[in-house]
Length: 330
Image (tube, rainbow, N blue to C red; front, side, top):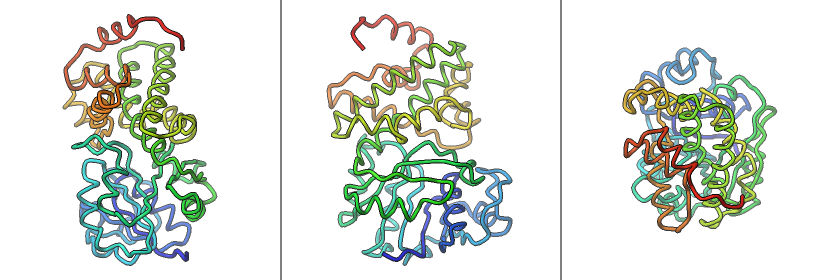
């Protein structure tokens, strides 16, 4: 397969970073976004101030608000928020050539059903072997060319390997996988764990509690992936443990920062306004509660975060209840 033109759908931080990286690699890159001011800024000044500040983007990026301009590409990257990914996928479906590859770069569950994105996107693209990209990758560091790594999964290892090779460069190394379930679960659950870690930080619980939270949260992630047909081993890789370590320890993570603001006593809506971007973990909590009931598994940390966000449960009382749970083998 000869690849020369790539369309990136979504001009937020991650979409712009991927577009920059691919343009630097010499691909013809079409970057689509809804906001005409952001698109004009990228084309005129080669930056995306709302999402990436003054970081310079490759001048060869062709940014547009016209979805039809993305047609006839070899690879399509879906980098829009989870809450709008189905809408955009349906709009672009008829534009995508039959031989083109599609890579979903969003992290989370489909909100109305609580399903993995792969289940819903396969209905829109029934003939496509979709790929899923996930891992510990802050967008600004990718633009700066700092070393990073991620995992790309499809059900066909030959397609995974092809895309991993085509999308990797000297600073972003992509590993191939066939575990589309594990890769997606890792990307979705880590957002909830990042909120939990932020809450712990904001509440002043200390380093011990955060380390315990991350470790036990990873166990919940593995438990869920296995119950949904994924491999627990995937969750100790880049799309699981790697993403958890990054997102649960840095204010560059919107989910962590949101949790920290809540832990410091900010109202949820006020915290969301301060973040200014999408907090995917907010939406994922409801989906995780659905999955917990459906699969009859125990996700106490995820359930606690849900209670704090959606039932206004008190943080310190909720943590106390977590610690009172029956003692059992690890």
